[in-house]
Figure 1 (cartoon, rainbow, N blue to C red):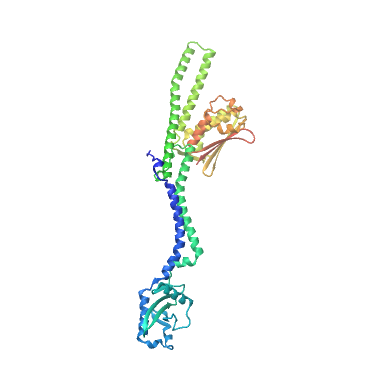
Figure 2 (figure 1 turned 90 degrees about the vertical axis):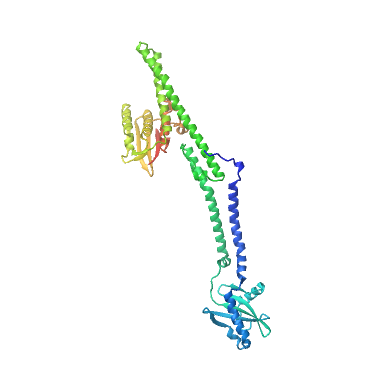
Length: 459
């Protein structure tokens, strides 16, 4: 595992990301609102384009060359012209006192533009909603100062920020949407690896000791990446400890079989020599019980260590065929009835031996405590296969015992368990086998009488 850098030696990068994210969102909104008037003002005072200056210059030269056009009766000729790219142009001639000479009908927009041009102190152009105004072009005629302004009474494309400036509610909505997108992107960037960590933690808690956080999360250069690396390190340690514990139990069980075999051999030799007392019979019985317990411990360790073996898609009936036959025979020998309801079409990915052993243990347990009838039912529900094993025995009175009966060596103080000579390993083996199939096993008392075990397996 890669070495983990101490958090004290790196900056708090998540703090920086949050700070930059919210700062960027607020800055964009403030900049958008603040720059719109500035952009509009700069566009209002845009320098006069050369082609419009040339147009005004042409008419100014004409007036300069023909001073008689300044007479009152001839000024109206300057009002309308159609000699600029086929578009109607309206000209305004202004004297040095700011009075428009060639018309009495001066629009409010033109007067406003004249003030703007005076403030700009240079020729400018401005696009209003439905007209383009430009000017002034200053020239002298017979020693007097005149100015020319022009107007296109037509719709011209306007910059995008004029639309935003005129529609303030829409601008606010766009700013809120943009900030939401940026905050959402930041939340996704921080939330996705946290969800991955949560799923890995859930899998580890459910018993999948091989589950690790993916490389995309562990390679992040922030605290979440360090947390993912620490989590994987913890998971490695947990897996090693659990596997070591299971191997230790398996090794001890194997080692115990050697002196046990010698004890049984010595006992057999003693009986062969005619030594058969109550004490030797008791020793033989306890040796057999010890042999059975060691076999159960080995089975429990084997199931837990091999839980990740490759599973094959097989029929449930085929997997449980021998187990069901044996259980039916055992029940009939005790005067009880085993009711089997399993559809032949049910198949599932399974490791047959552990699953068969789990069902066998549950059926034997049910047969032992049933009064007359045991039921095993298997059915599909969505993407799950539900197996129910129930009996009409005394059940388990204590609810805490219902949740703990699947723990190894757990022996509840109830009528069911006091009659048993087991060690509390059968149900633990069943649960380990179901967990190895990524399933779930639960126990509950039936409403009428008896115990019901429910197994849910992925199909």
